[in-house]
Image (cartoon, rainbow, N blue to C red; front, top):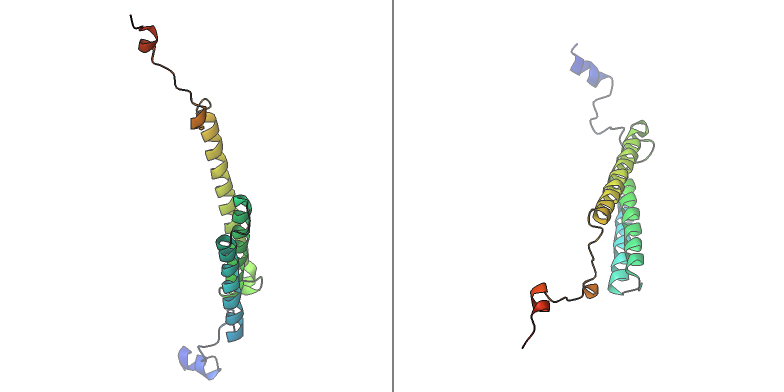
Length: 142
């Protein structure tokens, strides 16, 4: 009796059986409609010019982007604490933390390098006064 025959004899021959996460049609539709809503709201915020402050608009858009990423991870990638003993979710959380620390550190370094490398550099062109060249100051018409 071969190993293949023994495998089939024990009823393990259904290749469709997988312990991985599965979703239903309704689960995919919930994720789909949530994605549409989470895209439409920031679009309406920008097109309707809802907030006067640009920073507030950016924060709202970033918030909806993060929520949409979470919706995609749950409804389309089927990530939760039960899959693969929670290791998939743990590796994702580690990746998010690592990217956030790297991004924050990069922005911090770039900001301080910009501030400290050229301390006398004036970014306001209206504050620059026009001065006459030294050669013209000593020259008088007689």
